[in-house]
Length: 256
Image (cartoon, rainbow, N blue to C red; front, side, top):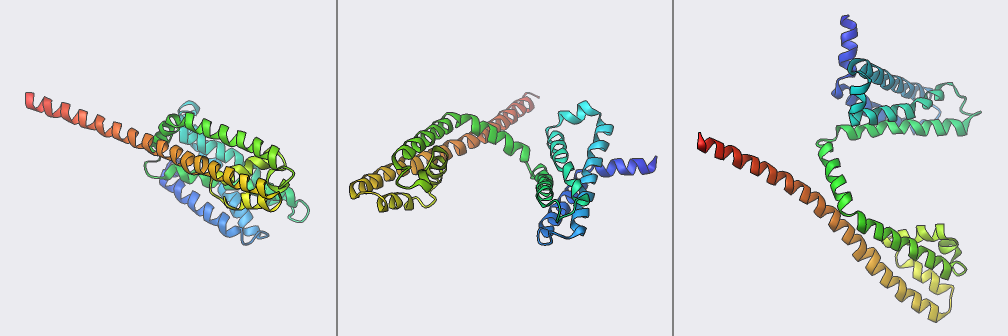
């Protein structure tokens, strides 16, 4: 009975689980330098089994309904299930099943996402993020539509001039997204100018400069400012609520 309680207290202790996740993440990182090492393959399988045991112990302790109510438990459970196929790493020959092995190894990385659970005040951050996302949803949708339409237009105009940048709508979408983010924003119109008549080059430079100004500078700045303001407003609302509660308590003390 004492051994069972020790196992239960170990796997329901968040600090102990944090240590396991940290050690597993470091082992995965170091193991990347020794791809063929069986030690790191078996050690990773060991941690995966520990996380499976953790899920089983928590479900048996809290019951499935209470366990699944907690959002972080759901998060941990999904990451653990995703990582289970990586246990096959220990039984596959590296030379004979390289592609399968690499795919399974990639799955084990998801366990490291459990570190998000232990970030201080992460629940408050997530709530603020949700509020900010709702507040800026319309602007984000409008921004996506602008990127989408601009990529189709650019593909229509420049697919033959610079096919590696605008050869089809998919490639063009990626190019325009990079352009709006400021990645090599001056290189795109230069490439167009080098492969087209002077008038087309000059007009393209002017057009892309306008696009970058309104989309890349004003557009991104607007989205950022709305997002940040919404998170601050959420914090301000919490502070105001605390002040109101404090005022009520002060008034009650005065009455007494």
